[in-house]
Length: 251
Ligand code: NAD
Image 1 (cartoon, rainbow, N blue to C red):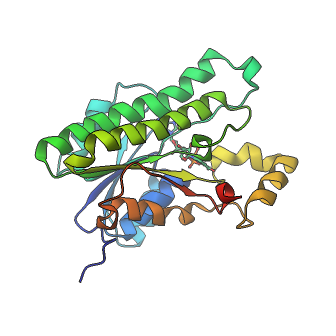
Image 2 (image 1 turned 90 degrees about the vertical axis):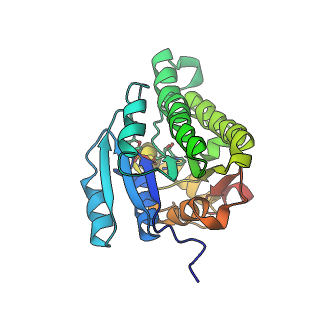
């Protein structure tokens, strides 16, 4: 009997796979048997080394996701030697400033990467999935700011709240056609994205005190949720935003 979480023979594309949560997800999907394509603007050697050292397969595609310019190329190059079965929209950025001072540039930059490119990249892969009728899995990396307000991150909160809505909309449109669209909402994880928070002693302490698990998440602690949502085990799971947050939202 094969495990319902087995991803052998599947091809997964992960955006922003060079570091942080994207790397954790890429490594976990590869460990479950998937061939992984990483898409990003930085070298992905560390991710490749981790995957290949464990006997997995990894390919890198270079692209800057701040505009829609590379979207068609990514879809066609990623599908060159076979279909993409699993799409993980992980690449994302954050800009911090008081709402009263927030600039249009910081608004647009975050919305473009976190929401606009995510939507059109998903549309590009979904067209192929719907065309060949074999379905697929889309996993969006949302945030606790898909549920909560946060402070000093207006465009980030808007983008991640928007991403939760988009996850549900796409699930409603595509569930009957074999595509599962779901999201993961990571809590507070140790990555570049949260460096400023961890360096602020007072914020760091306040955040830690609120996490029932008592520690910041490590990227490896996120991979299992992605494997589940990418696998046969999640065939009837549609439109959820799954918190992986050490209990933060339960508090
Ligand atoms: P990170 O900054 O380490 O990684 C972000 C990734 O996105 C990097 O690989 C980066 O290269 C890529 N990226 C950003 N802009 C890009 C662009 N224009 N083109 C191509 N790639 C681009 O941070 P992370 O924490 O690993 O973030 C990954 C995702 O998880 C993001 O969507 C983030 O919002 C989300 N998230 C993180 C946390 C956390 O606690 N770290 C919590 C909730 C959600």
